[in-house]
Image (spheres, rainbow, N blue to C red):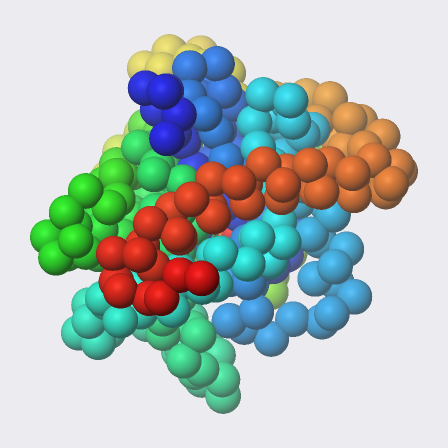
Length: 332
Ligand code: ATP
Ligand code: LTN
């Protein structure tokens, strides 16, 4: 579809304020592909409504997520940046793929199990079939690589199974995608419960560092991060809190774990926590400045959404048309 150029696709839900987990695990890695690949990065608002959203907040966060994509370095002239609900082919292909996805497969999804226990009063069918919509997002663009955090690996693997199943019946329809998980930002953990993923929907705001937190807040949150009763900064099994802080420091500075252990030899956790807070705040400062500039011009953001949706629709239409033809739908 792109004259031998490979395709990268990923998405982030506008379901909360974005965290440094989203930044290090996903968004920061998106721009790595901009030069060589044809890139589509989507604000997946249709995925977000699998749990109840406040309409005004969902709308605001959709603008914010697009602005953050750009503030994190994604150039809209080099990447197709758009909002999922602006390209109706996503929902249409999702229905078709639902018919090629098995109940047993969906039942095994960890995210479904987690979210249905968290939202026990609203275990809706959308929450259950969410991976079929995610597969549609990816397969519409004949995607080769999907940069995501490790928590999404299972969904991308299911997407591969769906693509292969479809291709077996209707050969040559979809490119089978690969998940790309960055080594460094694989899984950033909660600062309060370091065995749990840092998540934007966590109710404890002190467990989470948001990309838009100010410097003092970032430093205060790291100071309060849960660690252990040892005093020496070293990466080891069972030291989940310190391991998480070492990972974060390594992501922001590019230093290896060994270099970090050496740098903090003879220092206590207090010094180390302060250093982590400072490198994080320093790295996020330019992103925040650019974000506020972009957000202050809504008209430009909307023009951007329109341009992205037009570009994406062109490719999405082609794949959906091919799928409908293969299935035997009458084309007028
Ligand atoms: P929610 O809390 O609403 O489930 P989330 O914080 O998990 O949201 P998503 O929108 O589901 O965020 O994820 C966007 C991307 O960020 C995905 O690729 C996901 O793997 C990645 N990601 C999210 N949290 C982390 C984390 N703690 N560490 C590394 N990557 C993460
Ligand atoms: N399910 C993902 C968000 C998401 C996505 C995608 C990621 C929706 N569609 C397509 C990569 C590719 C999540 O919850 N983080």
